Amino acid sequence: MTQGTVRVVVADDQPLVRAGLSTVIDTEPGLEVVGQAGDGATAVALAHELRPDVVCMDIRMPGTDGITATRALCGPDVTDPIPVLVLTTFDVDEYLFGALEAGASGFLLKDAEPATLVEAVRSVAAGHGMLANALTRRVLREVVTRRRTQPVTAARASELLTPRELDILLLLAQGMSNEEIARELYLEVSTVKSHLARAMPKLGVRSRLQAVVWAYQNGIVDVPR
Image (tube, rainbow, N blue to C red; front, top):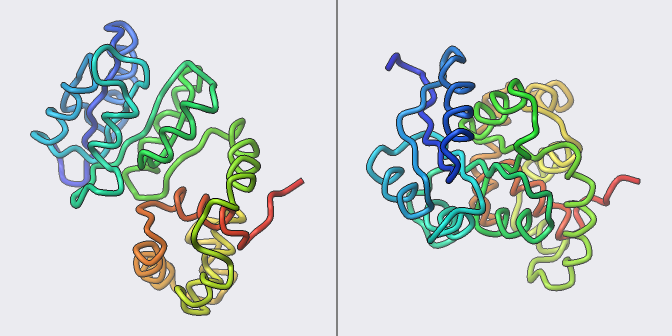
């Protein structure tokens, strides 16, 4: 493995799907599949042993399912989380929100193009998160309907975050990259990254995706029409 290579574990109960995903990832420069698992329990054990940069996790697997395995790898109580990108053929809200609540950094349907899979793996490895575009609006509307159950309010956000961190969160929630945020606020990209690194623990989140969901949950930004 060369320095800077993103190391990936692929977990799927279907051997052909597992092999196909692994081939797409392995043939991409800078990505390497270091392990494969056919069920959630094996995926968790393998991830703890190999410490990959990303686990590509199927949801429906025998024994320990993908959501339970995701929670074991990057849930709220995990002190040293391993990022998870959930891949599934099932476009079902129950799975989507279960995966996000379990701590997943991304959610992608298996019918996505290979280039989208590669982009998602890189994005999750970089801490940016990934949500399939077709699911985004539904996610945002759902988190708004759940907003009343959230203990943190918009007013509380101002107490948790510095003004600059709040500015960056607002732009992040609009879909801007670090580079775009830096240009908008006349900052260095490294400064944007530093602000985000300090802000996310305050919100109790571990990825950009979760920070964006948090912003919509707590009314910091409104769902686009």
